[in-house]
Image (cartoon, rainbow, N blue to C red; front, side):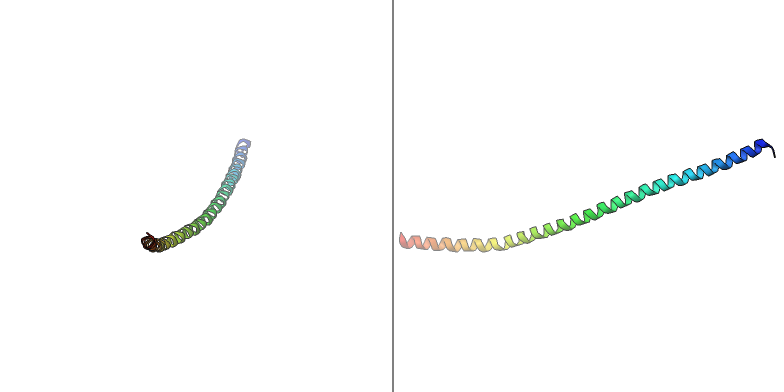
Length: 95
C-alpha cells in the first residue's frame, strides 16, 4: 500500500472521529439547554398553579362577601321601612 493511501485513510479516520466527537458535544450541549429550559418551564408552571390557587381563594372570599351582602341588604331595607313607618306614626301623634 502506498504512503499516500495510508495517509488518506488515517486522515479520514481522524476526521470521522472528530465529527463524532463534535456531534456528541453539540448534542450534549443542546440536551443540557433543553433540560434547563424544561426545569424553568416546570418552575413557572408551578408558580402559576400557586397563583391560580390564591386567585381562586380570593374569588371565593369575594363571592362569599357578595352573597352575604345580597342576603343582608334586603333585611336592612325592610328594617328601614319599618323604622320609617314608626317615625311617621310618632310624627302623627306629636303633630
